[in-house]
Image 1 (cartoon, helix red, strand yellow):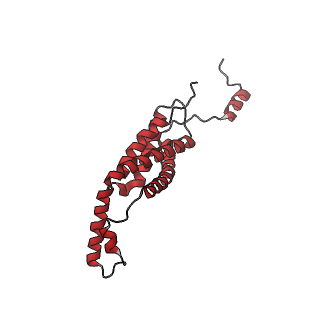
Image 2: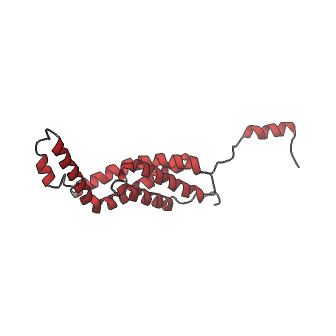
Image 3: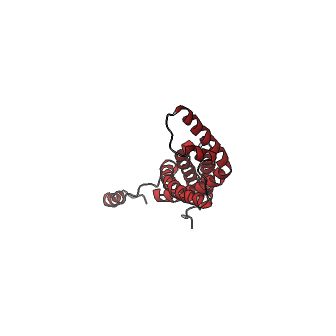
Length: 173
């Protein structure tokens, strides 16, 4: 029981919550991929800190995937109330572009008056699914990096050295 690995849920929740909040805030979300990788590295750090045994890259990938999924859900929750701000920001950018551009696509005024692309519940769920997949992949990458940086290193198991010690008689009794 002493070689048991610690649970991955709490580190994944902590890393995913931090990464999801940072990814959901406008203007900070341009570094979204970096936040997800960093959150998974943080989760790997917490996982390795609590582990009495050496962890593998697979352990880092698993906690990273969980972190990415948590981050996608938190990002969706944070982004939902801020969608109006994002829509207004995009609308003002498009208006400025329209002032300086010679030709804009047909119907762009209607798109702006309608508040941009209206998001339906199904589109939000589709976006959450896509985010979860992308964040899980980035989280796996961050988890592997985190375990390689913060994980405990297992001592090398060199069986040849024990055979040499037997042959030379270098045993301490």
